[in-house]
Length: 499
Image (cartoon, rainbow, N blue to C red):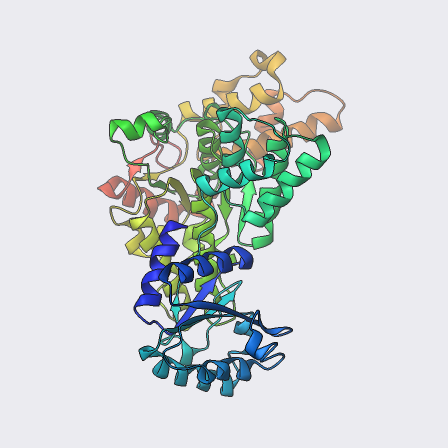
């Protein structure tokens, strides 16, 4: 909030005539604007909406009702030396109108020498091309920890309940990433239900958070139960991750360590890249957000960039967290700007700039199957802490993968399976293909009303043609790319096409 107040105050003092604030929190934004305007001493706040016109204005009651052009003409009726901040609600809906657009551009000239500022508050950025140069976009962040803590304590004041610092901290952390209005709703609901806040109310807040994130239709709040031990092989990668397990703690900050930035995992499908992302979140006890890059793109001009900014804002508000971007190569394959008026290029530019400059504890785990379609800028130092190549499992790693799956499915008779033989007989199989082989063997055993055996697994394996054979050229390219020093090997005994 302090950052917004400082930036907004500067824009008012510098006579920026047209300001656009994308936010769902209309009430909170208006309160912050009024506070800044009041602090300057010479700015009255006027609020207009389509239904009521200008409110709290005794000289022109309801002026501009159902007339957006008249709402703009109101500024010209005031003396040039009269200061004011004019908040226009939902005004983005009228910007395509030529009379509105022209009037705003005229005002952009005339207001430069007057202490007047027009502010549009809208859920997302939606500016026609001709207005992009005259508007200044100001980001309004979701509430941070101190503001959330203050609001929870205010809501609790009526109950006279004193919370321990530990419980209050848990509530604050669970509420980060929610709007202040949503926080109020879920806290008052919990108080109304029990008369006070209790430990299980943290789950209530987390459920509200999941609902909020789902409604953005950009990010998914992903539950995790996978553990580092569920990953067969990939010893170098696991060692790297375990070494950074405490890197988000206060003791790490006191030591002088920066927050880890992220990982890029490159390799063919089915080698455990997605499983690794889930295991990281579980092991580090951090929320996992999954981004489908395709959801960032929209047919409306400017909306893709707006969605990208919204994604970044949510991720930072929820930090510390893991942001998992699956198959980033497919999402940004058109970042050269050809064929989509440069939208992909602009979105990609915003994203990699954030990757390089972010100070928030958002650990990005991106996975890619085809490095050839990935823009080279993303591989530059500073975007990620490390680039790992996740290749096909070696025989020893296949033993570990078989052991993980069979121990999960048949822990009571694991010793009856010839795991060494299974690993030896499945060269070129990926981890996903090994899992599918076991599932097929289970179908064989189930259909014959008996438990599945080593022979069933081998029979199922004989029916599967691994991806390593059908995509041999792609795998060889990736392996040559990785071994040339472009990436770090995730395994100590990296398999070359299953050997």
